Length: 511
Image (cartoon, rainbow, N blue to C red):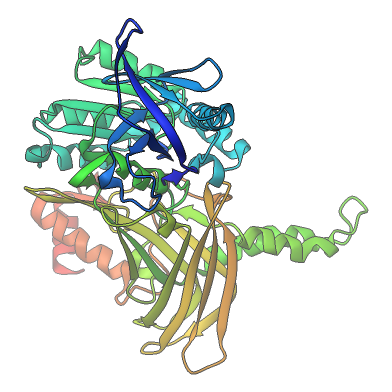
């Protein structure tokens, strides 16, 4: 986001040597147009005093960075040490000089137009960066084999996009994605990381003797600068339900460093939303609230708080996994193209919903998962968090409604899902679903910042009512097949015993 300050007229410009001696002067007076571009502070000098002149007509452009040396000289002059030399700016009066000095000071301190700070509560940011500063949390993500191996495959399957290229790793964490870029032959990799894990990432870079190739840049992508534009941006910015943590906005913000036509890895994101039926989950949440039904808990009547308890428990998105057979219809897909989207597009996400019910049942809410695609020059690779795929540390998310509804096969459901960004680096989730042509509708508002982590590490159970043949008879039929083929009976896939020959014959004959 570029923010222009008022322009200054009557400015004179001199060039100095590295020793501070006068090297030359620009002829005539100039107009100075300062421009805060977040990653740098641009000084544009025009020979024409007309403030409507296009940027392309600028006589001279000087970039000031966070670490650029600047200082006041006398009462009306200002010195800027830039990449190509040193300039001395002479203003008409002290007021003009102080206005520019103040603007540059705010930029270098990060006080002005800090997009991250504007959208984030300080307490949330502090907790967030502390969390990701722990090695244990980095380990949790790195040990997600499906996640980490998919990223490596996406990179190494598209070496043409990395070999000899300049790469930016946003939210580098341990630096693992920077290492993958190096493995693919990148010329240079800049890893931006705002948490304290940056020092450990730098240790890994030196331990692997890649300090000439991988450069760690501590700080937020909204605040830091890098010395050149990049060919590709790589990041792992996804949260629960794809958007939680609002890291995707930082990922999109990083495009200010991307060359025209550059690539984003991941390139696309798909959020899947489908209605589900799970009476056990619904009753589990309701039974928690029923604690507050007691009218004599150690002599205290708690019943006045039951409704508040129901609201609180149903306000929590449920993070776990499930059998896809609980879904009542095919998922609606909301897609975002990271190469084209702007960060403001993610401030309010409004998704229309429409389903044709594929199986009758009781609708208890909406289930969410996401896929991201790495669209490379050589191959497209998908990372999916669908319940049909190996489990990742993102799991899946389900949002319950307080009042379930009965739906029948062939009915059309419609509604909306709104994700409204908040300053706690998360979203308020508003869901509404109903049977078209009726007054039957269900709604809920949930706090994605406060989920219920339900996953217990147990195998996912099939939903009830899906056995169309006798499980007992199926078992004995399979046992007979096992005996015939191997001479061993298997119990849930584990060798149980090798029965005597008479048992083999009775099993095979059905007696």
